[in-house]
Amino acid sequence: MTFKLTYATMYTPPQELHDDFDKALEELKTNLGKEYPMYINGEDRYAEEKLKAYSPINTSWHLATFQKGTAKEANDAVAAAKAAFPSWKATPWQERVAIVSKFAHRIEERIYEISAAAALEVGKNRMEALGEIQEAADLILYSAQIMAENNGFVKEMRTDPLEGFVSKNRSVLKPYGVWLVISPFNFPVALAAGPVGNALIAGNTVVLKPASGVSWGDSLMVECAKEVGLPAGVLNLVTGPGSTVGNALTDNLDVAGITFTGSMEVGMDIYRKIANRKYPYPVILEMGGKNATIVSKNADLEDAAIGCVRSAFGLQGQKCSANSRMFVEEEFIEPFVKRVVELTNELAIGDPTLKTNWYGPVINKKAYEDYAKFCDDLEKSGTILTGGKRLVENGLDKGYFCAPTIAVDVPMDHYLWQTEMFLPIVMIAPIKNLEEGMHLANDVDYGLTSGFYGNEEETEWYFDNIEAGTTYVNRPQGSTTGAWPGFQPFGGWKGSGSAGKNGGGLYYLPLYMHEQSQTRVKHS
Image 1 (cartoon, rainbow, N blue to C red):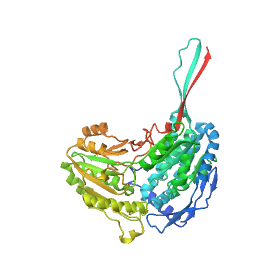
Image 2: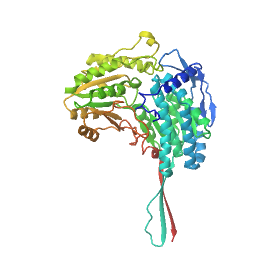
Image 3: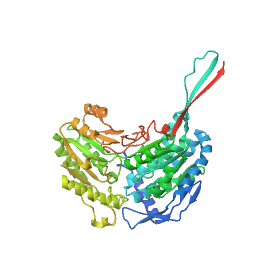
Image 4: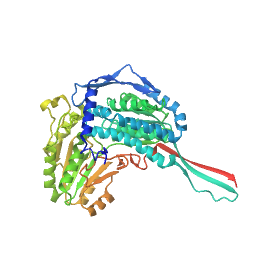
């Protein structure tokens, strides 16, 4: 069977992937510091002020230079998208699917180059980076598949039983207009490509605003759109601070819909801002999580320990799906904690672009400082079994490296049981029974992902009671992480998401369209 890269399969890649990644990485490193433009109305746009991006792996590595856009560029991008909308909307859905699918395949063709950029820019290991870029393409292609399977969402309804008349009814989903996509730093390409692809296939035009200073992968992705001939104004890229560019975009009344991925605080601010408009506009929010794994005394020890470590410390805990809480039945906790600590201490730490290293740095100085504060607070209240310190040996002081950290004996009223740290810190607590574990797992504002290890009877009980949108059972590939489009639809409940429908799933694409009921009557 041909190897298919997903987050679940990335632990056993063929050597060819490593060879091609190394080649792309070497080529990319020879041209560091290149300047990248914004892209507005089919043209490159440069700003007076620039933003220089440095790698969290080694802060002396100047990766690229981006444009520090202003409100003018933001509003110009919206105007371009608005002008392009009527033509793009009128393009038959089959043609939209064809060109956007070409866009996805072009991303696949450049997967090694874009992956190497993402690894350097974010500090993720090579397999996580390769997985992200393949996911970006697959998110787009899956939405194209859903559009085709639903015939462009043109559905015949029941015919009215009117004597002397023929009254035919149809339901049609139509695009909204200009769609704003605001993407996060941790999956800058995939979590831009998914919303962008869905919005475009639905017939909207798009303005993409990446996280400030993390625009390299998205700039390369937009190059792919240009290369396949996406019409001018259909996809626009604006870079710059959220305080100026981001606010200008969310303030612009010509923006008809928004997809935001990031913190609950910022997401809810956007949600409330849009709610103050004259009438409702669609806002799709993915806002993080405080994800728990419940471990039964009937669990397979090795599967549970490996899955929990992978989800706790993959991408240094900087995933909205990261496993930050573990609740373990008392009878099982001693061997479980022992094995989790052993596996954590075996993690290869260093430059994550190297094949030998699995674990890299946190994203920036603020995260580096937050890590120190949280570890200090945990030490005062509980016990840190491993980690708890920033790493400076063997050249790691050149980047933002923090040891993977496991804390126990932390009182359940401690604020960090409720706070999304977005760092490589996990807290473990014993539970008397699974009911107590379920109560603790659900007792947070978030409901994104969750994991469980136990027997079949317990599994059904778990699915019936857990309050999360993306759930996994007995999964050594990751207890709370690793969703893939078409396999595991990804989204959250409660404070983790606003849509109630999951990305990469059956019901996500229709969120980018509104319904029109059409009735045609004629005399029989």
